[in-house]
Each structure stands twice: as structure tokens, then as C-alpha cells.
Image 1 (tube, rainbow, N blue to C red):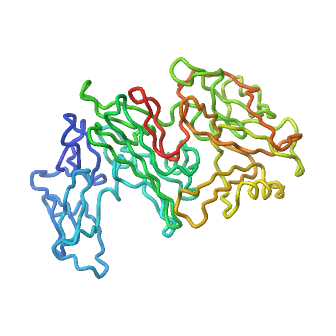
Image 2 (image 1 turned 30 degrees about the horizontal axis):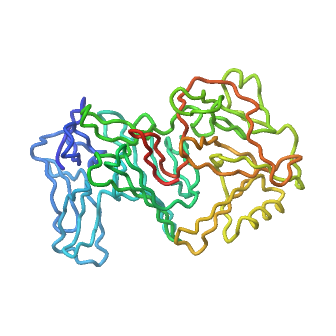
Image 3 (image 1 turned 120 degrees about the vertical axis):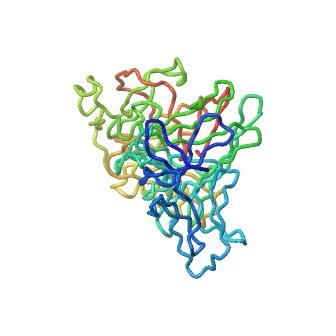
Length: 432
């Protein structure tokens, strides 16, 4: 931890960076909004007189940044600031009670040991926020975190607008995946209780430094340090292709491959499709590569119609969570409700919630879907959609309308956080 100046910047910032990586890689910045510009050699970080806050001041004594801890009746005498080996700066009492820590006030990096999630009681959560530019650590336009309105999924926001969305959480709790030869691993755990939901990850001994970076261009990168190339290697990037951008394929459209097989390098061409039983709302727009108007039904659905199955899907956004229902009850409830267009179900029995069921229902248009290619180890879900002439158990998966766009061909993961394809011959996953 110390003072640094980004490239092409005249300001001086207080930050934390890797000590075992030869390239300066800053993972946290204190004075993002108020860099030191005058007499930097006289600037200092010190404990405040009340011993409960860290204060950064310049040569004139102006406060540029502080931790803003409110003691709340707690005796903060003897508090110290400690930089621990995880990269977390902790302001703590002699009994190890943490008053403040950088892992709860991150910058643009999600690191091993941090928690990313939502507290239901306060309806608050943590986000990582991009820099404004390569040499400007001030908060940028893009942020990444769990959706506070629908916390079973994570999102990238561009300001207040959704830029990319993960799929729903299906009940996955803990996972570990190894590099080639089993020499290192990344472990991801999910905690889902009545009070909160969050994910965190750890690295095994011998694993290279790794983290998620929210870039100022709007992409979320999983990066690992390579001693071979002496550079950071991007193992995964989200969104992975243009049609994975939020709502890119419009209502009742989904992102997929125009040809079967692969999904990796040399696989199918990524593009938008209409669900079977639907057609482009504007054929002329689709022919020009504009899918924003999405798809429309060929035949209107009626209240008494059954539900067609669309397996291996990234479920649409805008769900309503209905509790205390098993799979049969979930299906029956949607069937009885004429406003219910679609539903999906998952068993969350491995969580510690009092209600371990996950019945999701949708009304109106379905937006932001994606076809999941199981050959890449991702776990899609079955969407049950009310369809004219559909009987119970009908399966729909054929692609009827697809116009190719030459985009990235790696399949987007279906994880509430991240599922990373092929890292040195295997997979690295965060929770699905």
C-alpha cells in the first residue's frame, strides 16, 4: 500500500497493489475523487485523533479521504490499520473487531475473500465500479454486482441502464475447478439465507494471482497473472459476444449459434433467434441485423393453452419469485393465472433459507434469453412457456429464424456470477 501515479496522470493516489507481480496492478484506490496535486511529498495517511478513522490529507491539511467510521458507542481506543495478505486493509480493534475494511468498499476489482451480494434487511449490496479511464481512477460508468431487485442474478450496469445480465442461480453452493494437472484451483461458495445472498471465492496454494476486473470499456474480465508472458491473461470476458448484451435480441428472441456443435473457437456463428412458434416482429429489421423489436407469436396464446418446454435456456429477466411451492404447485399456479406467460422451477434445498423452493413466473414479454450449450459445461434451465396448441410436456427448441452476424463464438456462461470456459484445458466456475 502506498502512493502511486497512473500513466498519463499528474495526480497522486493512495492505493493497494500486488507486491508479487512485477507490473504495477492497483486493486483499490482511496482518493478516487480527490487526487493529490500539490506538494505530494507532504501528504500523509494517519489515524484521526479519535482513533476510529483513517484520514488522508494533503500538505495544506485538507482532508482528501477518510474512512467515515461511526463508533456507535464502541470504544475505539487502540484501533490499528492492518494490511493483510489477502489485500484487504482492515481498521480493527485490539480484539480483532473490524471497524472498516476495503473489501467492503471496493474499487474496480473483485478479489478472493471478498463478498459480492445483497443484504435483504438493508436492501443494500456491494458493487465494483470501473475506473473512468486507463489513467483516471475516478469512478466510471460501469459497475458490477448482484441485482438488488432480483438478487438471484448479477448484472453489469452502464450508469442506471443494464448492460449485461447473468442467468439465475439454481441452488449451486460450492464448486472447485482445477488447472491442467491439478496444480491450482479456484473455489467459489454461495451463501443464501433469509437475510442475505452472496458469493465469494478463494484460491488454492500455488494458484496464480487472479481477480475479476470491471473495465472502463464495460467488460468484466477474469484475469490471472502469467509468469511465462509476464502479463495479465484474460481467462474470460463478459459479455462474451454482442448478442449477449442485455435485451439485444428483443422480446421472445434469444442469443445462440446459427449452427450446431462447438460454441468454442471455430464453432457456430452467434446471432439472434426466435423461439419456435414465434417469428421476427420486423423481418426487414432482422435482415439488417437489428433485432431490437424481437419476435411475435405466430398464433396468440389463450388462457387454457398448455406449456411448451424450452430446455437449456438462460431464463429471461423480470421474474417474480413465488415461495413455498414445489414443482407441481408452481406449474399449477401459473396455469391457473391467465396473466402468467411462463414459469421455471429449481430446488434450492442446499441453501439455509426456511423456504428452499424457487418458483419463478413471468408475465408479458420475455426479454434477454440465451441458449446454453451443455457441451461447454454450463447448466441451462427449462423454461415453460404458454403456447397455442401446446400440451403438457411439449418440447420446443428448434431455431426457425436466424440471420448470421459474425461475432464471438464462445458460449456465454449461465452463472449468477461467473462460469469461465477452458482455463488451460479445464474450467473455472463461479456459482451457476
